[in-house]
Length: 468
Image (cartoon, rainbow, N blue to C red; front, side):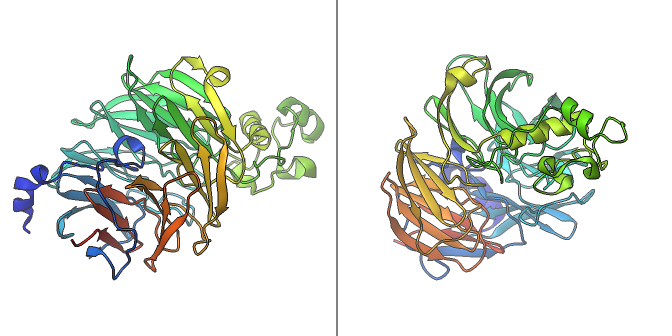
């Protein structure tokens, strides 16, 4: 099918879109997506397969189009594929302006695009934001960086009310900004008093008042006005490095935060900076060198992880973040939406702290919260009370999980790093229905629409569905 033909009748063919990471509203759900097969794989129930350059961004869908990003060398690539055939409709490249420091699990094309139906917006940490119309014509660019992040900026952009919003949490000078979707001009930019974080925000439209952008960060959730970036409310109780994404069900936001060294019982009470300086600052220069810190006060990881400005020493800000980190606790939180200012004591409904995921976002499906931890541990909680319903290993898929789960057709789909897609019955007492092996790594969260499941592996995109 030729691109022009797709352009002419594509939007009337497809009523259901998947416009951002985790789909409509960032929920991972698609009630109107129809029936999806339980069993599939490279040779079963595959409608088409298209080879791709490497990338870890998730596919997004609008009309008859699929958008995703990739990278080859210093070419930062945005691609459009046909949902009907998988044929590449267009491919555009931006030359990287720099090369940001990244964790080996990160990727230059990890952030997922977002679309408003007329335009597609992409973010590359090695360049910044860029926009194309759906036919691939460049609209604007908004360079950003360089960044000072331990593992690399990886949050995906989100869209609301004519603005593209991006969170850039880094160890110094973190911020959240909004760019006008049509012009690419800065609408607002708000500093964030956080360190490196990797979570994509979520949009909340209350019954009254302005649209909110809710962004997890170091030690707290914060809601901002889409109009001017002003803080509306915040809730404390998060850990240091949020990697998961929040989800909203009804009037409640759910968020899971996990960081190494912050499980229950691992907390350490460190003294305030003034006490440490008085006891350990041998040369009285007002900062702390590695050789000056007594062993009980030393970081458990690398010095670089706490030396936020990378000057070889710890100042008061850095020590305070380190001290807070050692005292914080990993938790799954349910937060009632609404309020203003600090809502921690009034709006946090419950916490759960046992065997939590690292990266996958929570899925709330039929009043059940689904969580997936590395090693193949699946947990279900009652969404209203936080009561544990079931926690057990996914036999046959005891692997690591970086994609987020999706729920459709009474089933939950979750992909492993090693390339297996596990299908569960969507219930508190879940059971495994199938394990489908693609034999190629999966980091991208699948997209779903109209009886099709779009799965990105390391080097290909599959459209899965019944051939009937």
